[in-house]
Image 1 (cartoon, helix red, strand yellow):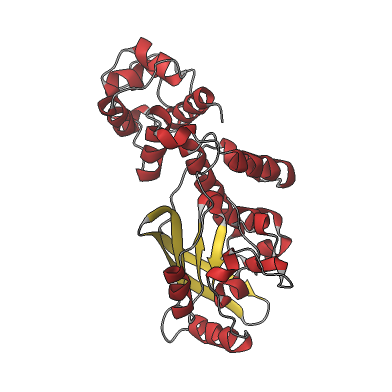
Image 2 (image 1 turned 90 degrees about the vertical axis):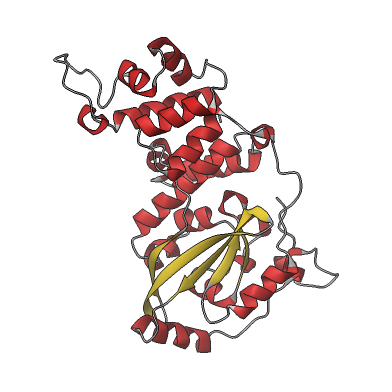
Length: 303
């Protein structure tokens, strides 16, 4: 990702989304040739010179201080995900220079045990780029069986945008798919040198009719909780409340759990699906190289 272009596009898109009224500015009588705030208005509200803000928006101002970044975040009324993204762009950390992760992502044995313990609800673990690193049996039944896919294809964004079944089973598909693209955009700001992420973005750009529109919106998101529903071909509609947690000890892995309301029709449907789906233990062996003669479909998941 071109850092200078990303800074420019993101700042322009965000100042275009803030009206003078929202920013608390009085009308000055000038004809407005651009939507939202002008550069000089952003600069004045953030307490910097127009020249400096212009260079900053063009990616030519180096790394600003945390105080300047905070002032811009406040002026542009950014939410938590947008603040994180702008900070990653303007004050890049050491991870920004990485072209690839230092080591493959692996799910530790205790987390596999947790997924087994959560066998009554769908639960899965994602890593970088929305890669699905592990999933329990109900997660495979509700979404798709990621273990049956080649190791380098087990990705939530790829499933949502390129698998035709996702459009049929994921309720409010456009909203969920768009939010997933926003999650990828947030990660691209933190890891602009990640070649595998760039390859994924290129693949989705070529193969998904909607991806480019969402990607170019420059929306960013860190999904933490909310509601989802699926239309399963066997048990029908299931409504979930989902929660996402960063895994303790590994900030690049996220545990996602889909819960249902007790006594609801969704709980009954999920119970029926659980009885219909044969249990299959999961464990760290799913992430290791198979022994001779073993099923290669459960091979390693390199990162």
